Amino acid sequence: MTVGRRPGVALLDTAALERSAVVANNAMNRERQLAGVNSYARELGFNPVEVLTDRLAGAAAAGAGWLDLCCGTGRALIQATGQLRRVALTERTTLVGVDLVDAFDPAPTPPANLRLVCASVATWAPDRPFDLITCLHGLHYVGDKLAVLARAADWLTPEGRFVADLDLSSIRLADGRPAGRRLTALLRDAGFAYDSRRRRISRTGRREVRLPYRFLGADDRAGPNYTGQPAVHSHYAEER
Image (tube, rainbow, N blue to C red):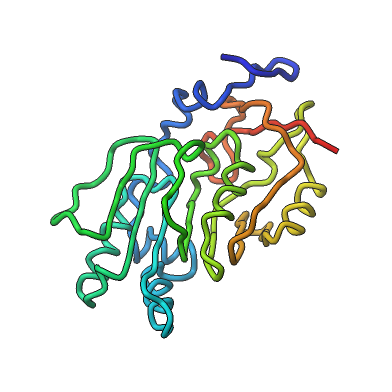
């Protein structure tokens, strides 16, 4: 289904986009480990397990949770459950991974604190807040990227941390131009920090976020982005 156009490009709605071969790309985050060379720890600059254990060190913390959006095979989450089990923190932690493709690695022993969900990040919602929410390179393949940012901000605990890869040049206006500095300023006003060199967006603490953009559709023929992999441009109408 096409929901909008710019010259020569038919934009796809979320359902059509999720059937696209570009979105089924399995080269980005499918095999990433928790730690090591190709890992979350190296990509993020911190080990997610350490975020959870630091949270649990607080006197008032009954539990801690990590949500990984576009988690691929869930390998990092599975490895994290093993580390948490070895330090007797299984019952005090919750780990959730969400991915559009049901190709999760098998967990050696199904851990009580891990849930891997095959679902669209556009429609899925958690039943609890999280101390850490990550999305490594997943937003490159999402249609309504701004909606995911707003939803993730609402899923954080008061001190929770959200970190995701985001190429702002992939967020376009109706005529195809990048949303540019106005969007960057609005994101910062909404409490997000953006590292343009690393193309990394982050925030700390829960907040209800409303951005003045209406999603028009996605272009799955945008070509490779800075990662070298084909990616998706998201098109929006500005609402003044």
